[in-house]
Length: 449
Image (cartoon, rainbow, N blue to C red; front, top):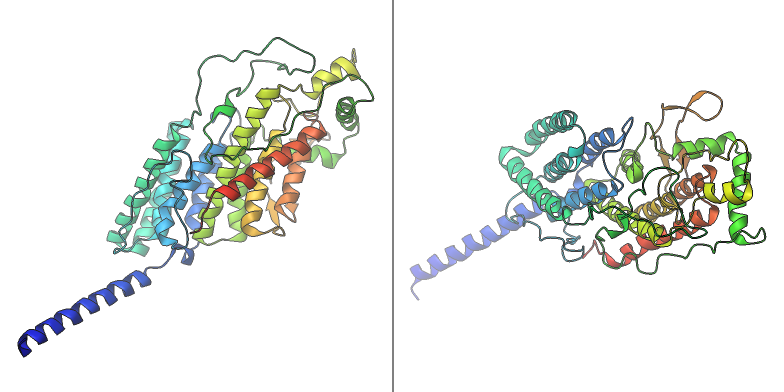
């Protein structure tokens, strides 16, 4: 080999190694998602909560937890290339489609990816909000963040990142449309009445097919449910004792118990069904200030846990058709009372067992504890400034301070006993079901490689 040929080969080798080194350096220099705050997530949660908090009516159906879950999944997948220790949920969640692949040789701006994904998901999912309000709220924040993030990222990186986040959202939303949330359309028929069977106080059964929604995590409901108590009118029976406690408590409610019941009743104004937890999620991020990667994990994991817990709760409710306290108390404990016995809160139009509030709150508490630990304090100010009459004229519902997520779940669970719409066993077993559901998800769903 001539000296000239050798010099040419040496030069090629040097240039190649320099290119590899440069590429590796550039890849290494691209900031990871954990280096950014979660500001864009908080802002989009602010828009979502403003849409969810409706003064009257509920245009969202009875599983807004779907919004929380799918938005969280889209957020997580949109910044996943910026979280090298994490793995995709594709192949883990039921029927989830493959996600687009980010170019490893090009830089991305992860806040922009997150922003684009949440903008698209909010616009699509919250279309049930009056169109003018929806578009104004989404467009306003979208324009604000577009200007800010493009200045931070540069035009090319911004456009690439926005396109990636939007494509993730489009695929997640299309997948969400196949989860049986609106199935079936046939009217539900209760079976012939038998003692202890639930019957709605007014109107048709609410959300009777909620238990048919596709589970996000296969096996999340395995071995989570308990049987209801055995019906009995015998005053010495556990069933009678449980119902009698509801009656007794209703006669002696303290102002604090009334406040707790009212705070988590979520009605007029309020957050429909499980949507209160989206408000709690926003406040958690404001108070704990997680980085973008941890915020995405929190959003996805908590939403997934809550979504499957909602499905599981309605599945058990309409399997057992357990009666509500008002039925038993009026027929057996206080028959013929004048005036007829009334619970402190209006009874929802679906069966008693288990308590939705207990199931939902404990699934959320378990998921949050798995991320932030068992001693993390949180203040829930969802209804700070909201005036309500709990027996002595309008007063501010204020805020609720908790030493842990479990403490919050415990109060939310017992609020339904104070409201007179669940007996204690339904709350306690519902709490177990919610925790077990989230625990199954924690065991099966892997976020780390």
